[in-house]
Amino acid sequence: MKKNVIYALIGILFLSLSSFAFHKFYVGIFQVNYAAEKKMIQITSRIFVDDLNNGIEKKYHKKTFIGTEKETRTDIDLLKKYLSENFSIKINGKPKNITFLSKELEAGDVLVCYSRITTVEKFKTLEITNTILTDWNAEQQNITHISAYDTKRTVLFTESSSKEVLKY
Image: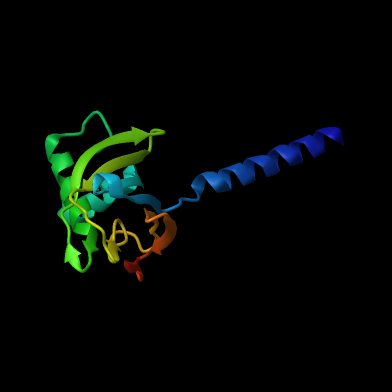
């Protein structure tokens, strides 16, 4: 009897753990910070690298190996192009140039990208458009934390909601 209970518990444990392993989350985390003293907006993006490679391949019809030892300069150029086409910021209604600084792989499967916008004076509106991976996967959600003027806000960007205007 004791063996049957143990086998049943092991079976339940195996089934519950395997169901978690097969469930995939499609989420990106973005941090947008306005550093008034530096007159700069700092942007940090955290995106699952396999999803990013798939999204770039679908959009540009070229297989990329971002975050692997096979990564090429062309892969990085496509990454920069993809990010610039799918993440934008307007300040007081005017588009701003986002400069890609660097990237690193975190925990083996999350690509962290660092970018910035320089010469940012005081502003009244900040418009963010974020369509990263939503064109590739309708389940993709991009959680974006925005810090400016001692206030913190969080916006969820999805396929159906890709733009937000924040007023200060």
